[in-house]
Amino acid sequence: MCLTYDDGLDSHLDVAAPALDSFGIKGTFYCTGSSPSLHRRLGEWRALSTSGHELGNHSLFHPCDGARFEWVKPEYDFRTYSISQIKNELYTANTLLTAIDGKQDRTYAYTCSDFKVGGQIFIDSIRSLFYAARSDGPMAESIDKMDLHFVPSWGVVDPSGEDLIKYVKKAEEKGTMAVFMFHSVGGGYLNVSTKAHRELLTYLAENKNQIWTDTFINVMRYVKEVR
Image (cartoon, rainbow, N blue to C red; front, side, top):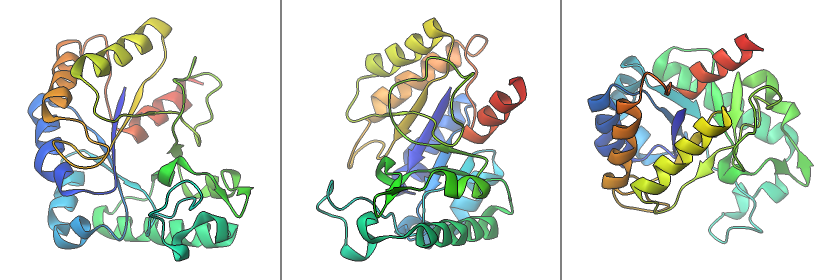
């Protein structure tokens, strides 16, 4: 089980991380290099990593496919990006994160879950940069054949605690893993309420002997080992 949080938001430091810590659960925080929160609260993000949470790569400028999202700026539109451009951006973002947490192994979360630039799939081109990568999509039927550089997750938007727990139980029934993709916690865009988030954490903590919850990179290391 993996709990991941995108975009490097203040609510991750103020709401999500304290809630995780209160239950002894570790999460993965995919920070965009240009995040205002990362700029203003760098020491807190460093402390987050020191306490056992993962800082993941979510690019420098959060480029996405402008055909899908009107808010994408022309200079950050994946339709005009090249393979070398996205590779260079992600390499530089890795360097930034290493300067923050001192770690070399890194995982990536596809921005907007987009994996094409200029119409070309770039998944294979970035494998050497990351231990694993998270996208979106239906829950994996099995971890045996799952591409570690294109791991599916559920991008939640205003779910109830019951919805979140049902997703965990579905993974339990299938004998596979569930990955949550959160954004704002406790108010904001693509939000999960504090109540729903805490209900999920309560369930995971109460069932910790049956459900292993850890950072994305640690779970991916386990998947790679058991294969």
